Image 1 (cartoon, one colour):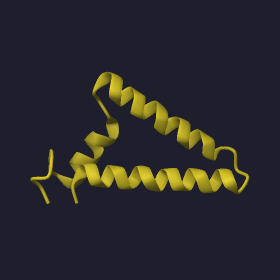
Image 2 (cartoon, rainbow, N blue to C red; image 1 turned 180 degrees about the vertical axis):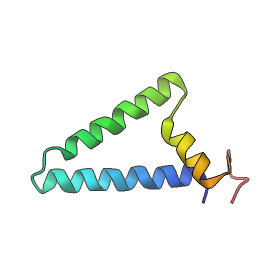
Image 3 (cartoon, rainbow, N blue to C red; image 1 turned 180 degrees about the horizontal axis):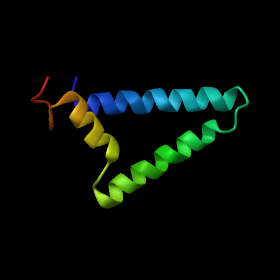
Length: 69
């Protein structure tokens, strides 16, 4: 698994958890979504994303495009 695929999977899991929390009456699930929005905007503006760095260190490879498996 590439770092980007792992990051996307983790984002999807976090969104699911946040939505489940919100629909079960826990309003702090909304803060998870706001945190993710903030981090995505920060990444888009600065070009640095902490989760990119973490997942690249965990998986040890940096793949751009379809050339990696």
